Length: 154
Image (tube, rainbow, N blue to C red; front, side, top):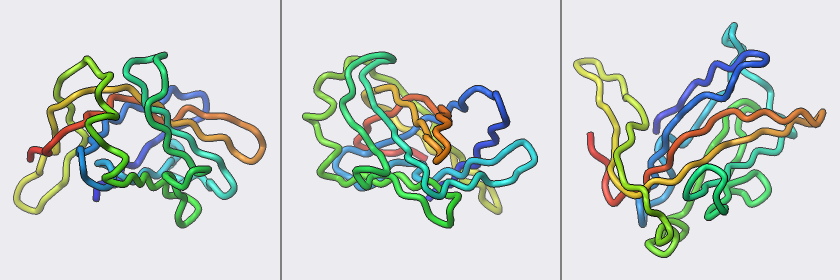
């Protein structure tokens, strides 16, 4: 698992983070995020509603929704956002409307001897993830491309 630490200050734009969803496999890569302020303080997400929408292109029709409402997004330790998707949700039928094809790099796993770059090639969609806090404040935290792939390369 790769955990992304997102440093997001007041009035800062959303951070780009590409994701990889393996067709026929559980959970995306990376699958955890921690929202932190400029001084590296984790933001308390207790009671927040989080929603991620996946579309063929920016502004297109939603083809997949992950949220705290449907259980595909959970919050642990009041600060960690967990994305969870089942293999049955990532199917050839889901990506049949996608026309963009390409490669994304979703992260780097730091090793003691060398780092491992995690990337994949496949059909691409766009996503964004928004958080609605208990006071009604809505923040667009992250956005990027989702690569629907049959295999992840390292």
